[in-house]
Length: 202
Image 1 (cartoon, rainbow, N blue to C red):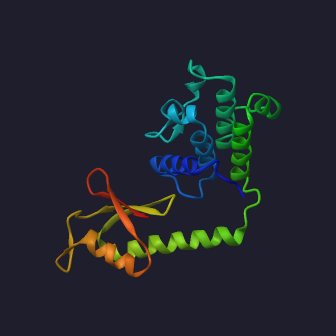
Image 2: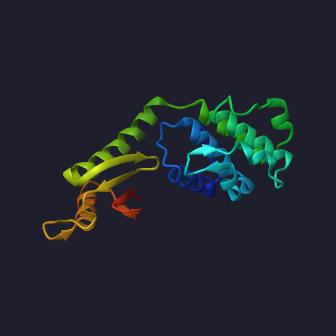
Image 3: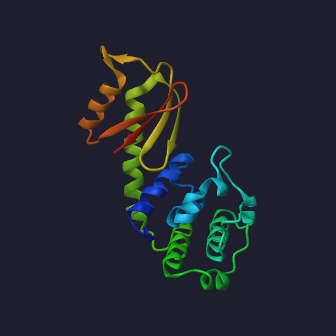
């Protein structure tokens, strides 16, 4: 089972996965973001490494002047875990160019990518909880939903017919909060373009 370096690493990882709108089964991109979120320099320059609009890596990053031998090696690893055809990664060179902290980051990313030590029963329980949360939200919103997309980190994004609709004279957000609290979930909302709204589990 892989482990984050610290809480900040975990929070950054969740942020990047959410920005890219990937689900928890997208192991390739999750492995990529695990590396990028675990190194301060890579996280700071993430826009040079990943195109969030196109949801694709930027191979031109290797021409960036801020790269060091260590950050270059980490990007090569991240790209290789994402798509082996995109970048070569020499194991010997990789660990020769990394300090202890970044070596641990690399090892944990590899464990994530190949699900090393993953207990299937624990993972199934997490997925079940996630699916239950999403199912409850969609059940409540029912016909008001035009389209729904599930993303990592206990959230679901919906496109509503009317973002201002009410349920029994109450704003839908308040009604949904009360409904979800009754099922053991605390939620908040993020509003996107048009009628897109993301419902997050706190």
